[in-house]
Length: 275
Image 1 (cartoon, rainbow, N blue to C red):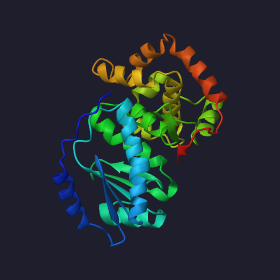
Image 2 (image 1 turned 90 degrees about the vertical axis):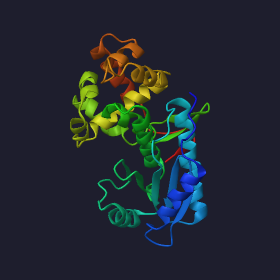
Image 3 (image 1 turned 30 degrees about the vertical axis):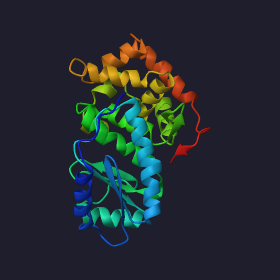
Image 4 (image 1 turned 120 degrees about the vertical axis):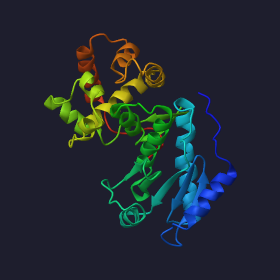
C-alpha cells in the first residue's frame, strides 16, 4: 500500500520545534523530528533518538505499509516521560489534565500522544494507530479502532510485516468467555463509544483485540480493513464486511468457533517484541 508524501516541509517542522522549545517544562528535554511526528522526551538525546527510531519509525513504516496511505493532517507531538512521576506531573502542567491511565494516551484536542515510556513501548504503538485511523478512516467505530490499536500493544515483525502477539488481555477474555458474558459480534460492532469504553472489565477491548488477532492469523486482517473502508457508508459497523471476509453466514456458530480459538491461546512469544 503506497503512502502519500507528507504535506509538511522541513521548514514547517523546524518552525514547530522552535515553538515547542518555548513550552518545554525544563532543560532536561530532548526533541527529535521523526516524520510525521515530533518526539519530545525528558531523557538524554540519544535515548529519545532511540525511541524515535526503534519504536516510532519502526511502527509507522509498518502501519503505513499494510494499512494507512495518509499521514495525520497536522504535525503531532509525542511526549515521552521517563517514569510515572514525570508523566503525571508534566501531563497535568502541559495539558491541564490528569492522566486516566498509567501508560499513555492520544489526545486529538491537544494534538499529542502522551506516554509514560517507562512502562515500555507497547502503549505507544497502540496509540500511534489512532491518529492514523483518524486521518484515513474517520468513521471507524470504536471496536475496530481499539481492536487494531490494542493488537499492536505486544508486537514484532513477521515476514517483514507488523504482527500482534498474545498479550496480557488474554486471561481476562478467557475468563469472560467461560463466564458467558462476551457480547455477540453484532453487539460489539454496533457499540457506541460510551458503550464500548464504559466496560470496566475490559471485555470489549479483549474481544476486539482477539477478533483482530484471529483475522491476522487467518491472513484476513488487511483485507478486512480495506473492505471495511471501501464499504463504510453501507456498513458503518463493519458487521456485514466481517461476515463476508470471514465467509461466515452464521455468526453465532462463528462466535463459538472463535471462543474455542481464544481458549486455546497461551501467553508466550517466539519473536522479538516491542513491549
